[in-house]
Image 1 (cartoon, one colour):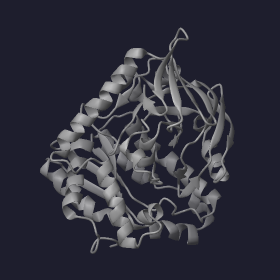
Image 2 (cartoon, rainbow, N blue to C red; image 1 turned 30 degrees about the horizontal axis):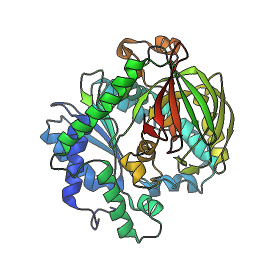
Image 3 (cartoon, helix red, strand yellow; image 1 turned 135 degrees about the vertical axis):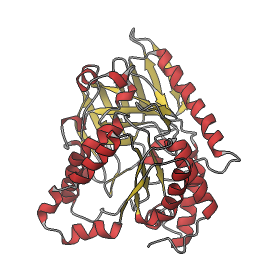
Length: 415
């Protein structure tokens, strides 16, 4: 099994990350089942997660592993019609498990450039088929029916992408250090440290909720963008309470506060401030224009075809489902690293997401129907893809319903 026998990573710190995943990320409850997905290289972490989950009283831990070599075998040898198929039976089973209150944990760590040399059309077809099949399970997550979380394992190919000048083991060790630092596991009491961090994020989101802005105005190099906010929107950050009553941290790490834009009220142009790693391809130099909430022009200096296929996924793919604020001084930003992984890179800069909105980002969202969410401006799509638009050169103003302006961020920092 790759990386398992000779991993250069301290087992004690792997165990600490596993404990944070169960206690902080999921807040797993006694008797609750856990559905866990991970790259096969992350087995050392998954094993410790299982230990902590069962110690917390888990009913059943079910791991589902993926493997990069098997993924490439499909692109190299499968028949053409394979790329329009996805394991809907698996995703229906996952949705059924979530419907019975199973928690969801995803460990990321695959090579972000795994599919970069494969046929972009096949990658797009496979991605679309997978997104359509996964939707029953995704809706349980995006609607926050259950407690769920994401965290990372430093896979070797990923590490070599982030640290291309280092040998294999040194690169993995370096990426592990970066993941551990961002995941806040090295204090005397990581669980208490996370509680304090979540409280700071809750304070930020509380201030924003008190302002009741109608829109946010982003200005910076290549950017003059007004993002209208959904009617009855609500800001969140840090720990959140799912519909099943469990408070969890969906992202390990996290530095953002976020809410739902109005799908019809986004105007202007915006330039990405970091590359986007998506489905094994790198999209760089993104520049788009919005009119009436919809992308009408989209350009990229690299990965143009991938970007175009992404926004053509469905009607909602050209509209926004999330806007998030992250200070330029966040630990991930200050590391100076490009992780090629959205879980980390989105926590280095303010960002927007194309596609599906989160129902929890509405006042009383747990009781709203899909039609009510849409009527208040929430977007629906088979995708949800974040990309970064903040930096130390970007200012953000909150715009009140009366047109008044309040500084929110100046040069990437909270104002």
